[in-house]
Image 1 (cartoon, rainbow, N blue to C red):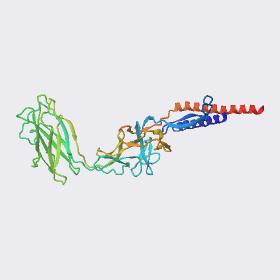
Image 2: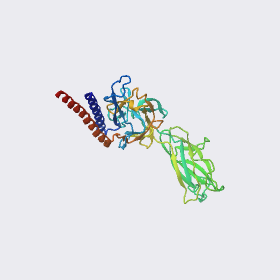
Image 3: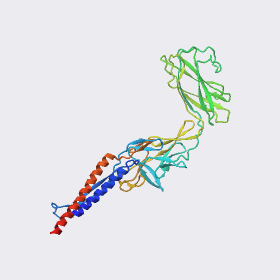
Image 4: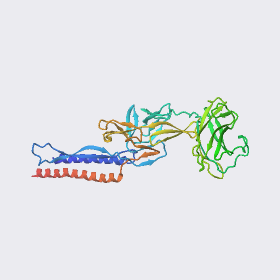
Amino acid sequence: MSYQTGLSGLHAASNDLDVIGNNIANAHTVGFKQGTAVFSDMYANAMLGATNNQIGIGVATSAIVRDFSEGTPTQTGNPLDLDIRGNGFFLLSQNGTLVYSRNGQFQQDSDGNIINSGNGLPLMGYAVGPNGVVDTSRLVQLTTATVANLPPKPTSAIAWSFNLNAGDDIPKVTPFDPTNNQSYSFATTATAYDSEGNQHQISIYLVKDPATPNQWSAYIAPQGSDVTVDNGTGAPSSYTQIGTLTFDSSGRLTSSSSLSFDMSMSNGSASPQTIAIDLGNTTQYAATTDSVTRYHPDGYAAAAYNGTLSVADDGTITAGYTNGETLVIGQVATATFANPNGLESQSGNLFYATQASGTAQIGTPGTFNHGVLQGFMEESSNVDLTDQLVALITAQRNYQANAQTIKTQQAVDQSLINI
């Protein structure tokens, strides 16, 4: 029986060495999760009541358990290198079957498809619908092949705020005339885009009221003869009054901050085009001069995809355009499992779902039980080389000790033969 016991010990120690060696070999494999050999003792079946004289018959390898703790994130120069902080696996398609991986090294192939670097398998996620909203109802292969030129967006709102100098003089000329700078107190210009992406310069003029303290009149005038404006009356003109600003004795705006005007073009673009102006946070404080404190117009001209991508922590993939704008083109999906150790390991940093692992729970990064993503990062192997080298020494001693058991039994047998 000692031979059998020693042989089982040799076999177990050999398995332990195999697991440790595999860990060491993959110490620099991105997304690798180290394994540990788990052993159990073996006993022969005992007859009823004969439990005090049982002698073990060796050891068996009961399982290889993986440690799914996070590896250290390492920064890279690739925006499609992704690191999952927390639970989750990337979803890949292998001949139509979903497989899973913690290796977040991705790149684009010649057709613009996002694939993993090791196997060339497409990354799965959610596409953006025609309404610009991510469609989470079905998984698709993520790609940039469908990224088109960005159409123009006509300006519909301008967020504008000013500090109007409380010490400004009353304009010397009345009534207001945009061509005479002595008829207004302050003016500044914004760029507005029409439905075809053409630029138009629109100026706002602020006139301090000569009769009512703390009151200013706001006018709009386009810079160009092909554009007219009106304040909603339907009477286009070269300029129009869009409202009155009233301040309290502390310089705070008390009148409505929401104004608007219609812009009409003769170039064939959609007309009239209503533009809302938000003058919130405009103040009237004493200063050396009037100033713009906030300026944020929407709208932009048409632009081409410039080839840049970024991935947010919730997995949304954003494409960059030559005009500085960005557009969401998809979202990475991740999967979690009730029992990750039930996954079946395959070559290429891949896992397959099994009955033991449970069904994949697919969702978006950052939602319940799904970790967030980090772009420009990859997850290092979680192998601790120091621990593994110590374990290697221990496994070697175990192997030698079990070999000594067989050697000792052989010596005993030889003594019996020599009698």
